[in-house]
Amino acid sequence: MLRSYSLQHECGEELEPLLREYRDAVNQILEELWSHIEWEKRKVKGKKQWRLLPKYKVDIHSKEYKKELRDSLLQEWPYAAHWVDSVIKTAYSILKSWRKNYVKGDRKRRRPTAKRLFARAKQTLIKLEGEKLRVTVKPGEHVYLDLSARYFKLPSEVSSAGLGEPIITLEKVHLPVHCEEDAQNSKPAVAWDFNLLSFD
Image (cartoon, rainbow, N blue to C red; front, side, top):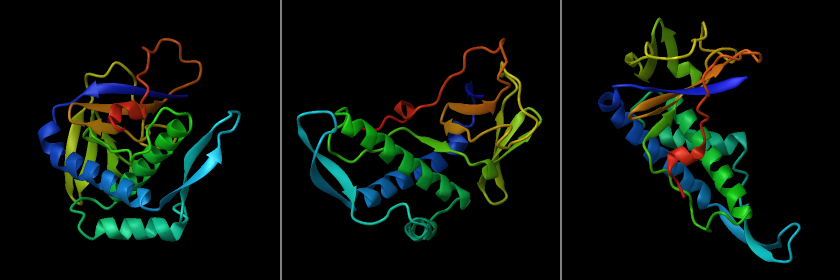
């Protein structure tokens, strides 16, 4: 079972430049993906109405296309390269969420935009060091988030069986922790969702 817990941190000033670059890069990828959308008039399944639904003119899920996106971002990217992989993953997730809600009639026909400052840290960018989470910002440059005030148990390692990919904002770190299915005494988890990103 995966639970997500939120903790305050005091590294906002150190992390702000990275978070701003990350948000801008996410929006850059969203703009690029949006440019490949064409609109088709199709009947809505189960309803007596027609909608303009998005269709991609290129295969945005192909390895070749994603490599082109990655290479284009890396040209002027000032931080560790693995942040770019996270940027692309996040942009795709936001667009997928927008499309799902658009088809349901809950979103307008305009490009989603990430507004809040946040970053999803890949497991290759983080390491547990005692009571601290070490976050790689640039090669050889790290920020340490103090986890000592937590109300939950930390796993022994950062892995698919331990700690997942945390979401970092200016004030908080949202930690996805793999727990035992029969754990009964944990406080309610704070589930992460894209509403926290403030996009529309």
